[in-house]
Image 1 (cartoon, helix red, strand yellow):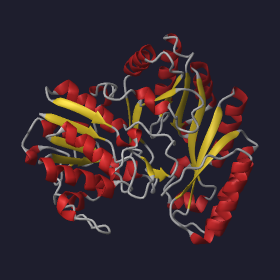
Image 2: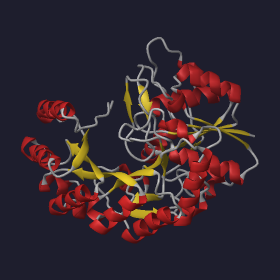
Image 3: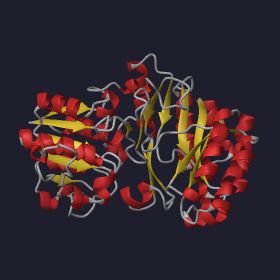
Length: 428
C-alpha cells in the first residue's frame, strides 16, 4: 500500500507562496524565495509510519518545493497513493482540499485531513464542497474526505493506516480526542524524503546561522486567548518535554549527517517553561561538547531568570524570542495573558540578557480584544522603551484589520524597519 504524507500546496491560485506553520500562524508572500517552516508534525507522522508499518511511505513538501495545484497534482499522480495525508490551516484549506479531492476523484485515494482548520471545522472538512472558480469544472473533484483528525494526530493516523475500527480510534472525528501524547514515543522526524537542512536555504529570517529546526518540547502552560495551540489544538494548557538524552541524540545525529550545520532553531510553543529542564538540557549540551553550535529558541520571559540566561549563554544560545504581546494591562487581561504580562519582569530579563550577551527578539500583537488607539499606543510606546533595554528585533502581528489603528501601525512599521529593529512577515 502506498501512502503519501503531504504538506500544503506551496503556491496558491493567486501566485502567493505559502508559509505553513503547523501549530501557529500560516501566512503567504509574493516572494518565492522566502523561507519555509519545517512541517514538524507531518514529519513526525511520516517517520512514525515508516517505523511502525511495512507500507510504502512517501513524504512530499509542496511548500518547500513551491508546488502549485497543477504541479502538485502531476507529482501525486505519479506516486499513485492509496492514502493521502494532509495538514491544513485556514489559510491553505481551499487549495489543499482542491488538490486532495481531485486526486481522490482520479485515483480513488482515501483522504486523511489533519491540522488546525480540520480540528476546528471537522464536519465542514469531512463533507467538503468545492466552490467553483471562473470557468472551472468542479466535476473533477470528489465530494468528501474520508477521515478528519482532531488535535495531535501522529498516532491517530497510525491507527487509521493499520486499519483499526474507525469507531474505536480516538482522535478521529466524531470520536473523542486522543490524550496528549508522550513525546518520547516518537521517532526523530522525517529526514529521508526531504533533507532537514534544506529548510535553512533560505532560513527563517532571524536565524543568523545555518540552523535546523528541532523540537525539545511541545505545548505551553499559558492559554492566551488568541493562541490556536492552548485553546484549540491541545484544548488545555500543557507543557511536555522530551528526555534530554533523546534531544542530545538527535542533535548529534543531525550534526553528523550535516557537517555544514551551524546551529539549531528550537521552533516550539515555549522552550523554557520549566527551569529544571532548561538547566538539564543546557548542561547536557555543554557536557556533550555541543555548545560550539549556535542555538535560538521560542521562549517566554515570564519563566526566565538570570541563572537560566547564563546557562543558555554557556550552552551556545545566541537569540531568544519572547512573546511580549502588549504594553496594555487592559488588553493583557482580555488576552488572558495572566503571569505572562509583567513589564517589571520584562525589563529585568532584558537588562540581564544585555549584560550576559544574548539577543532578545520580541513579538507584539495589535488589534486584539479591547484594542483601540489609546491601548495599542501603549504597546508602541513600550517598543520604543525596550529598544534602549536590549531588544534586538521585534515582530508585529495584526490579529484583526483594526482600521482605527492601521495608519499609525504602518508608520511605526516603517520607522522600525528603517532603524533595523523589526522583522515583518506578509500575512495574507
